[in-house]
Length: 488
Image (cartoon, rainbow, N blue to C red; front, side, top):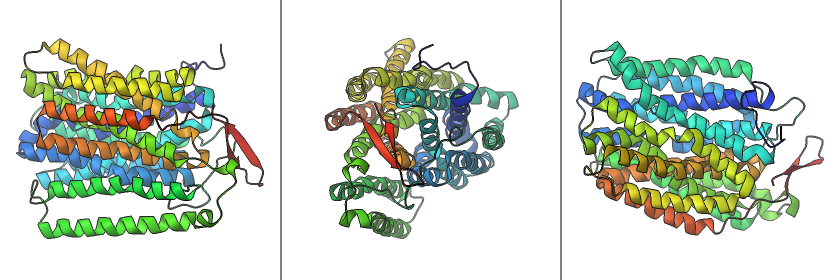
């Protein structure tokens, strides 16, 4: 068997770690999107308005923005084994809270807190990068992301049936509580069955924790600029909850939130200055530098790819239900076709990147993404349902293969910062989701899909600035010697 081929039927060594880790990611998505296929039952049970339902969708992805950055730092500092296990255990709690909610306020709080479990993806990116060489990394990361992402499709296909089995108005509560139980049990399983690195390997950690290291003054400025949209997305959420939106929060409270976000940004910038102060005075040797421009480009691409997937997975059951007058179970099954493509699309994006180049693969997939969403904007009740499903599946191939191609590059930038880079890039996916779901709350479904297509075109233009990873990256071993890691 070729050294570049992965024997996925094995359950030893790095393949064992890959399987255990994608299952952990699968469970985070299964729990995170446990509401999407049950929205109609939840809305009826809690007497929610259409505006409140859309607000729940936005709240569901909001906390994941800062959570992915925080979890990225924790992963780099404490290792993926401990971080993933704690995340699954803590993330189970909002599932139980949501299952017991009696009104919109309780449901909104639970959905907001459950966004924390969406940060799990970041942890596995670092874990997989520790176990697989560069020549297999895109494929392995694609399998991890694609098979794990399928958790949202599994939720769409199974949870309505589970709710029906329990029956009655509270069937949805049992289904959602079930997802929390699975997350809690697997947190123990994961902790007891994985290690952070292969035996004898070094787990490289950041020199300092609390902010991302950069290696030039220009990169420091770009880092601060790239932080702004993350805070802006949270401000956008606050606006959505203000009297100008669904009027959950008063104008005074929203003003306090805006001020707090501004203060947090300043404190974040100050911490980044402290982390990078030495570099700003004495830049590191060329061997130890990396270009933050690479991270910025990947952030914007993930905004368009994963951001659109999060938004579309959240709204697609409702879109099919309203467009084609389908019942909730059928709408959930039909909509799951979009997420179902993750099983092959994301691994395919990583595999193609490994074989034919990172940048060229991203260019082709981003162009296909733009065309795919333009096609979805044309779907109407006049279309046969099967044709709409085919269009959704074709679009999702480019979306999810693009995600796989993005994270085929992320671990090749700077090993000891992989968790933080993955955290920031992953957070941009949630920034995109908040942006797109806010757009959805203001415009028609057709205009929503067109907006995503337009941002994909912008992503294609920015992608021209990306540099193909080549050569080696350097990390310092505990004894002070330098370790060179192949990135091509």
